[in-house]
Image 1 (cartoon, rainbow, N blue to C red):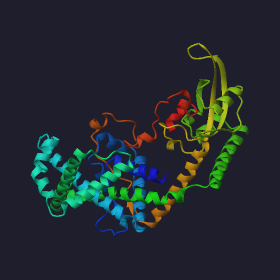
Image 2 (cartoon, rainbow, N blue to C red; image 1 turned 90 degrees about the horizontal axis):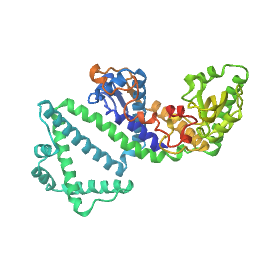
Image 3 (cartoon, rainbow, N blue to C red; image 1 turned 45 degrees about the vertical axis):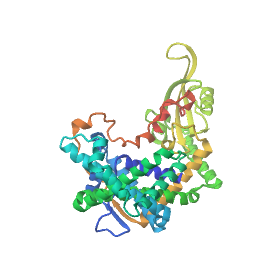
Image 4 (tube, helix red, strand yellow; image 1 turned 60 degrees about the vertical axis):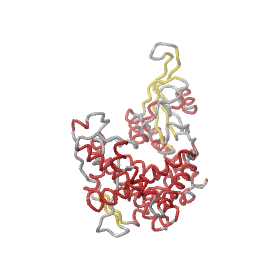
Length: 435
C-alpha cells in the first residue's frame, strides 16, 4: 500500500510533466515552489492539459498538495539517511544522467523544430551523438567501469520486474546506448553552464525524479509501520456501521429518503436521490439483489452489507415486464451507501477486494494520510496553489474533456471500465462513475 501510494503521487505529478525547484535562497530543508514555477511546470504540456487545470482551481489545489506531500516524504527519507544508502546513491546518479541526456536531446530537437527542420533518430545521432564521439568516450580511462556498473543496474532492474536479460549479441548494443546517454549527459552539463534557463529546468526535473527514487525505497521501510491490526479493522468497520445506523434512524424518523441520499451517500446515484432505476435479477451483487426483490414498494430495508459497504435500500416500484415489454421481474429502488472504503480507490480492472480487505485498505490509507500530514509539518515546503496558465482557447477545445477534469494519469483513477459481467457493477452500473 505504501509503495502504491508513492506510485500514485509520482504518477500524478509525472503525468503532467511536473518538476520541482529547490530555490537558490532556500536552505537544504526548505523547498519553495512559486506560482511562476508551477506555471513553468506546464510549459511543454498540451493545450488540453493546460485548459483542464486553468479551468479548475480545485485541480490546481489538489496537484499542489500532492506535490507538497511528495517532497515532504522525500525530505523525511533524506533525514533518515535513505538517500545515503549505496544502492540509492547509484540510482540517484543514474537518474541524473538520464535527466541531463533527455533534456539535452529535447532542447536540440526543439531548436531544430523552430528552424523548420525534422530530426529523425538517425539524424539526431549523427549530429549530436556520432559513433566516433561515443567510441572516444568508451575508450576514456575508467569509463567502461561506469558503463558496466550502469549495465549491471539495468540487469538487476529487469530481474526484479521479471524481464529476461538481454541476449548475448545485444549486450554490446546496450552498453553503447549507455555510453550514448553518458555523452548526451555530458553535453547537457555543458549546456547548463551556458544556459541558466536550461539549468533551472534540469534542476527542477532532477529534484522530482530523485525524490521518486528515494520515496520508493523509503516505502519499503514503512510498509510494516502501516499494516493494520485486526483490532483496528474491527473498530473501523464498527464505526462505519454506526454511521449507517445513524442514517437509517433519520430515514425511519420520516426524513425524505432522496434528500438524505443526496446529502450522505457515496454512490454515483446520489445526485438522483439514490435512484437506481429499474433493474432485473443478476444486475446487482447478491446481498443487495436479495434484499431489493424481497421488499415491497414503499418499504425501506435494514442495514445491508455488501463488498462495497453498508446500504440502506428503498423500493419505489415493481413490475413484471422490462422496457422492451418482455416478461421480467424488475424493481425500481433507491439506496444510500456508506462505503467501507473510498470508491475512487477501487481498481475497476480487478475483482472486488471483499468487505474486510476493503476495510483493511481503508485503515491503512488513513494511517498513511496521517503520516503524510505529520511529516508535512516537520519540513518547510511551500507550494503555490494559485497559479495561472496561458491557454490557446482554439487548441484547448480539441479533445478537451469536462472543465476542471484531472490530468492524464489521474483520470484512470475515476473512470471505470465497462463491467465484464452484470455482477461487476457495484451495485448498479451507475456506481462505476465513482470508482
